[in-house]
Amino acid sequence: MLTIDLRGHLAVITGASGMLGRVMARTFADCGADLVLHYFHGKDEAETLAGELRRKTGRRVMTVQADVTSAEDIARMKTEVVQRMGVPDILVHNAVIQYEQKPVLEQPVIDFEGQYQSCVMQTVHMVQAFVPEIIAKGDGGRIVVISSELASYPEETWGAYTAAKRGLDGVVRVLAKELGPHKITVNQIAPGWTITENDRRDHTESQPEYEKQVPLGRRGTDEEIAQMCAFFASPLASFTTGAYIPVSGGRVMPAI
Image (cartoon, rainbow, N blue to C red; front, side, top):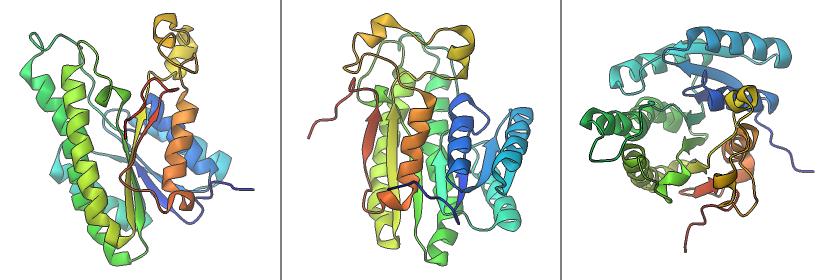
């Protein structure tokens, strides 16, 4: 029977204190990975999660603060990680800046800049900081980037976010070619409108108008996104790179 086995691997998950990030962290720990939980403002949430994972799984877990839009912060984070945990071989780029959605004609330019920095430049800063040592180690690695169904299925008022995710797509595809010779895969997961702990708390899981557009007739869950992320991070995905995989119940179907 196939299983997702991440024992012996060290994963850095950005935005690990957020709704989706914490489920990714739990899933990776359940699969056997040691973890670096990145946060920006969510220190208490990250520390609570780290304690939970240590108790329940026995994995090595550290937390680290950084602004993913800052090359200096990411470089400092990398130094802390390597000193305390070693060189990671899995990078999960999940963090993103939140902003108020407005029509493009009304959206402040700073929102476009912020989305570009947190989507595109986060990936650039992370790979420039971490990948040289992954290459030097010589064992290959995995980079998993969280995109969005909106990169393929634009919606009104999501101009800044969609533009940033489409820019991210270009960087990821180039990285897949550049890092392939080093046995490092680079893939994107594109969630649909995902059910998280907030929805379960507020009983907002069902969104009938959205669900009408989904062939599978429902919204996906944070666990389903995390499971695809763990798959891409695992040896089971050793010959897949440069992929953009929607996890949206069929709402988005990339053309060939």
